[in-house]
Image 1: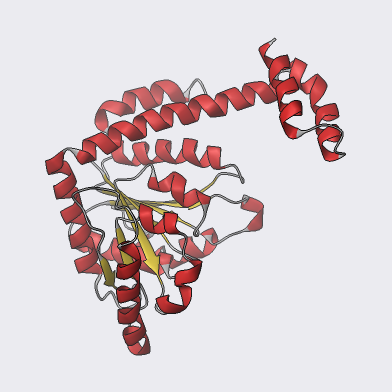
Image 2 (image 1 turned 180 degrees about the vertical axis):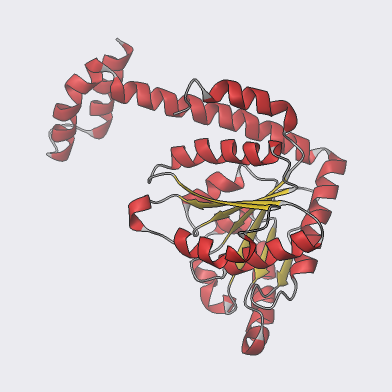
Length: 293
């Protein structure tokens, strides 16, 4: 939860935010997110832009995840004062993800970073949370889409502002081109995130850097278009409202779990639900009534 000391800090930072370009980046494990992020950082730094990176792990920090590997693969930029890399964990609670990540994004924004990259570990519910807090959502896919289309969640495609088929190098190039056609066809069955933007599908290689300049060019084009149409500001306004309600929900849940009357009933209610002596809805009503009383 937000500490009383943090509130005035965030309020003081608020006037200095809004300039950074916030880009979410996701993809299944093994798709090459960290390698691509590392290469993208290099391309942005070569263009004179400063970069903040948040590597988000929605799972328990005790499970390890990919964060250690992420940090190791980005060590090329560890000594660069124009780059800041931070690993974040929400300890298995997606509400924590939706609370802490926007805070961190705003801190990096206020600190003057031109671009903030928010990298998530894999395809799942955390992607929905991150997609709702960024200006642009990039989804990385692997070559061989024809074999994977059945396993692609429609929601992931609907959230994407751009799909990049990574590892399009060496012998993977033909499969990557086929994947572009397959994903392009799949996107035609989804509702785009904007009425004025059709998500491109392209190839790239985080290993060789091929296609990354073009990829960032598309991201820059999206920002220009969204700014011109007013959609960028509309999206930011909606994000602020969603963040407010997320904080309300988290605090209400914390208050309910810490309420003495609820704590007095919780053990019995959980046991009865586990043993089938009462329904989840009836138990929930009892807990809420105790909280409200």
